[in-house]
Length: 310
Image (cartoon, rainbow, N blue to C red):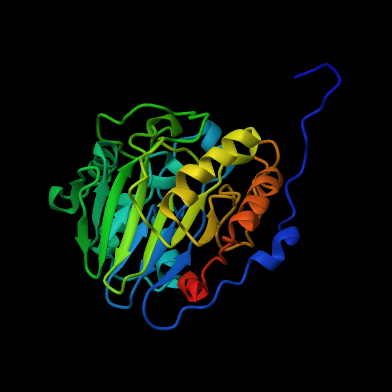
């Protein structure tokens, strides 16, 4: 840091983006409920999948100094508020604690299969899941989950990855934050029998060309740490995700302060860790030029972004 410069304090004001909230509410059919960070409940009334399922959201001091463990009572309350009693699949987008720490508990309480890479499997084992509820996916090979078909496509974590590497032994909570290494990072393609399609890009990283032959009408686009990248990186990220799949609507995720409980009003991550304003300064003009809708989801609300497709 140059002499005399001070880090920017405070955090972005979500009020600047108020007009980008308010996606159409879902009735019947497929709907998506945002539950913070990259946790998305995608259901059709009969079957349901959940990315991540991270609900404990421990405070920053606990993350920095303590040992982490899922808060089972809080997880149960969150599942109840979201109306989740059964799931077909829990799918962590990668295995950092803010994505995968609660995944074994959520799978156990909902009867879901925990699906992902070998690192996610080790979190499942450490959480006491039986082997028949744990699955290691084959990249690019579709998996049926009720009315949905999911495809895991290899991706990358956004730089910097503070806990790189794969998890090679069961993570038994309580565990240090460093035990939750990134593992495999995924782009998850979600296709429904109704013809509705979405891509869940949980981390603001990409693998060049990985999505070139895929198509999705909606992208749930992770923007965590995107605001500390240069504009060229942000533009390339958009090109390798949104533009690559031909999406017509984008819903931004992983922008909220995940050290704050989910039952309090969401706020953006502080400038010390990210810069949502810098992200939006690049993404908003890109979306306008390409005729792509750019939105924020409303937590707890079952929404239908496909209603905007016409």
